[in-house]
Amino acid sequence: QQPVQSPQAVILREGEDAVINCSSSKALYSVHWYRQKHGEAPVFLMILLKGGEQKGHDKISASFNEKKQQSSLYLTASQLSYSGTYFCGTGVNTGNQFYFGTGTSLTVIP
Amino acid sequence: DGGITQSPKYLFRKEGQNVTLSCEQNLNHDAMYWYRQDPGQGLRLIYYSQIVNDFQKGDIAEGYSVSREKKESFPLTVTSAQKNPTAFYLCASLLGEVDTGELFFGEGSRLTVL
Image 1 (cartoon, rainbow over the protein chains, first blue to last red):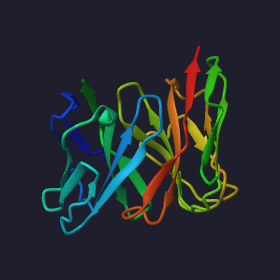
Image 2 (tube, each protein chain N blue to C red; image 1 turned 135 degrees about the vertical axis):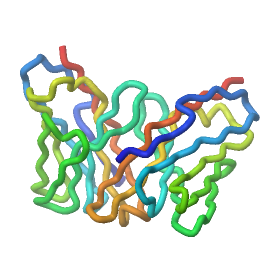
Image 3 (cartoon, rainbow over the protein chains, first blue to last red; image 1 turned 135 degrees about the horizontal axis):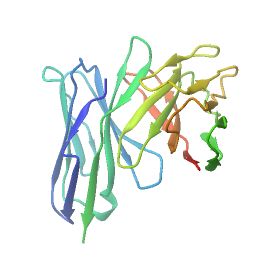
Image 4 (cartoon, helix red, strand yellow; image 1 turned 90 degrees about the horizontal axis):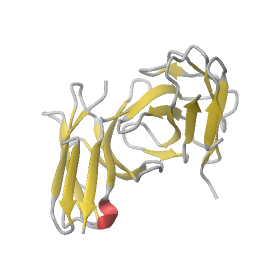
């Protein structure tokens, strides 16, 4: 059930860009993105709905290709505060189940 | 302030003991969830509840039990049948529908079995 993310981990210097991918073997109705700082709870970043609409959050944006059952998160001009683990997530609306992806650890260094 | 409160934040347990993790929300959300997180790994769904007096197993429900007697409360019991219970446990509630809404999380409970 769990979506697969890639890469598993990435290290960036401040100002560099990164892309995190999320792929599901099941149909995606929507894709959520969350960020978790070390030792804290995940925090909602954004949601993408069917239709490929791209939504942004400051310098973080995402895309959703429902045909390919994939989503990508784009982090532009990364800042130290972007460090954390990023999770994609998807709901199964036949029962209100919500599954998270395998996670991507992102570390931004000065 | 509205939110989700989990307690205790840290818990130590001896092998063979049952422990109950508390999760309370005052957001008036219907659906609630329990996830388990192991170091460096993702969040795995243990149980979820859509409404009061209803709950469903997630992918890793074995060794866990829950109840949902009140809308605000969704406690998780880690039983002695759970073979490897040391983990970080997160409770969440859902604002809206699962495919268009947003999950809100508590601060988590870290369980260590000695």
